[in-house]
Amino acid sequence: MGRIKEISRKSAYRRKRNPVVYLICEGTETEIRYFKRFRSRGCHIDIIPIPSQYKAADRLVQKVRSTIGTNPYYPDEGDMIWCVFDRDENSDGSLQKAKQTAMREGYRLAYSNPSFELWFLLHFVNQKAEIADCQSVIRMLKQTGRLERYEKSQDVYDQLKPLQESAIRYAKERVRTLKEEKLEIICRQSNPVTTVADLVEYLNSRR
Image (cartoon, rainbow, N blue to C red; front, side, top):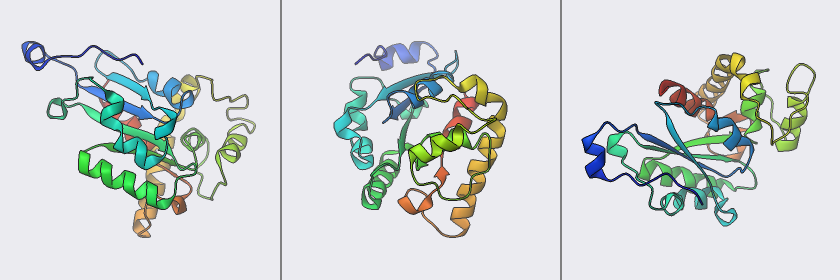
């Protein structure tokens, strides 16, 4: 598995080092193609797909350090780790363990319920009603006037970019509503919800 070169603290202190954003993704296509487009001179993103045996939410978060391997991780110099995952078949117990580990270790979570494609859908509609599963989200996404020929292997960043501000607003409004209702965000019952907007805002701020 390819990795960036290790940067020693000695060399890091000799010159200005741009912080690294590590994205630990359960997906192998959709998320990776999308987030690659946020890379810039000032935003060093290392996207790491996780091995299949770690795709349960709690395992994904618990295995972050071993997944990163020997890559430099200096949170005191601005490095950040984001875990990007969907509801899938995760139980509420698994999701809560993932949240607790992330809070303890200082990681951030970009969680989507039911799937990452909900983030794409929010560029076109303020979705508030529950959606059964990923395939249902994709069917809605492929409606006329949206991403009619959408496939997971497509790069849809350019099509979505003009609508990004609306998607961020809709996503954050939904999270705020759930919090006001005292409902947990990282759980199965929060459908539909995504915190990908937080990650997108952060990446945009680093450009």
